[in-house]
Length: 268
Image 1 (cartoon, rainbow, N blue to C red):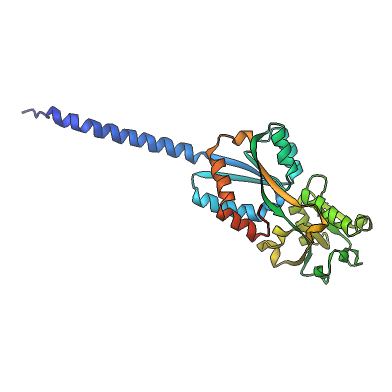
Image 2 (image 1 turned 90 degrees about the horizontal axis):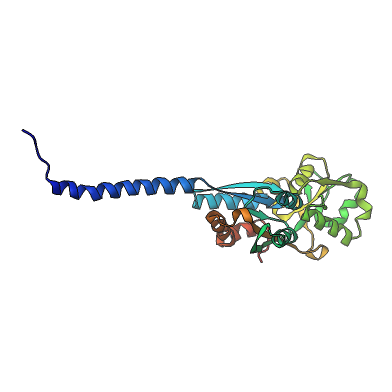
């Protein structure tokens, strides 16, 4: 005997099946697009400790957004972006490069903002008998054979180092002692490795876990160099990316500000 299924039961199950299928498609599509979301950031080398912490916090709060960081000198990134390097946001160590990218149409108009002000320090490894708290004039000590600074031609922190040395009348006297790092991170490596006896580094590096226990430092007075305002700019590639907007909101929020303050930056 053949069983007959009442039509009303079929009619009642159809909306349920459709709804379940729609929900499956929505979840699958939503997860695929969000999981593939990636933002590419070019960041000045002085930001390494702070930006690493910020990205960890951001990715924890936004697990579907992947942040890919590249560190280097601001001048080199500026040149690379002009040549088509595929970045979404550029966090520079000055305000000049981001402003120029905005003016030239490579940055999104109105999306160039100062996010922090940096400082420089005289840093000496703990193995040294030199006392950095005696001030910048210790670079004239006979025990100082090499002084590491970032290349001032394309690294704003290197330019600040030159300005400080000139401010104290030391620049001409130390020319034969200078060794130049490609960026401020490489400059720190020179002093850590013993390739230089002292270095003029970013305060953010000096207070980072890696260097805090490895040496001692003296904060160079702010009047000795031009103010190190640091700006970011959203590049055309990141213009319409939701992840870019969310990342910048995180950076400017309380958690981002807390990290910048932790590493010695002043907030705008």
